[in-house]
Image 1 (cartoon, one colour):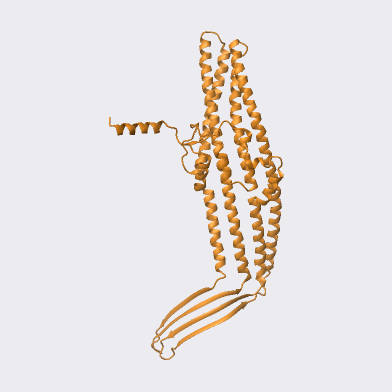
Image 2: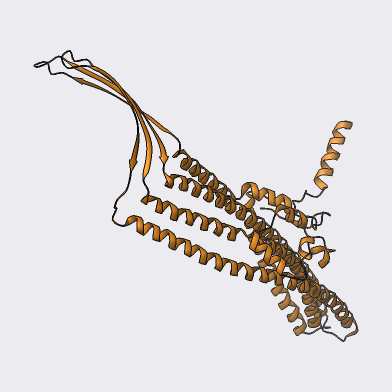
Length: 447
């Protein structure tokens, strides 16, 4: 065989035998930032609002228009044919239009609000991706443990049948193992469905097939699971509340809406004021009639003022409506402030609970493992039954699932707290990403 061909085949076999390159949380997040449609819609909303801001500014600039006409008339019984050509240039520049200036200020505020909405949408996306990522890992954990339990019980069922055939165990023992096998088989089917559902949620956000997800490293303590910024305020929730009052995006949105409502009131009040414009015109006409025709050129420059006197009370009503809208937003601000404080306290408590839960689940897994080994030894000496072993085995797999899930919940609780405080960023995702296990793949996702 040609040496170069042999080398090529060897390289290809090596690549095929190597594990697939897994995608971690940071990569999946970048995919979502590029593909998520909610974020794309929010970006478009901002662009639309920026155009509206430009349009509001254009109303304060000079407006120049032109008009032209050509007329032909034939009344040969009384006069010759008549041709008239005319054109004009018209210029208008607002001099005193307070409502236009206030409208421009309002569109600037609304643009700032749309920027806040975009920021909020991005933070929510970071949180949604993290939730979907760890939901996928949790579903795969459940499936993997269900398969392990299924295989273990299948082996036990095989052994118990052999013992039953030789008469060393009763029918009751065989039926107990068979019933547990059937139950685990149903749980395995349910776990497979959960993996598929969580996979579809990820696909919706990233719009691509994910070959694999990096799992959390197994050697994680609560100290490693807690990001530095979360432990800084571990002894008090008050710094988080203060941070949320200053940075919560929804509170900032309401602040912009309050400013917008104030400007709406001023815009409505400006209807009481006069409107003053500078107007200028240059006109020219050419009439070909020999008897009556004439050419003319004219120009004019002047100031035009309009003062509203009475419009049926519409202006008064609009001012009252704008003031009521402002009062309504103030009430919303207070409501949101109270709600934010409640959410911060709840998320902070969730972190403290998750910390204790990880510790408790770690101890529960150790205890369940010891109980399983003790039960298996008890069967060998005849002090424990097959049912006892099945219960101990089920408890062991259950504690393993619960421990993995409690670690995910601790991470997500931290991200929830930061998002509710308005400070969640890509740097936080990078911090979580460092907790992943980059050893050979354990979790595989495919469509």
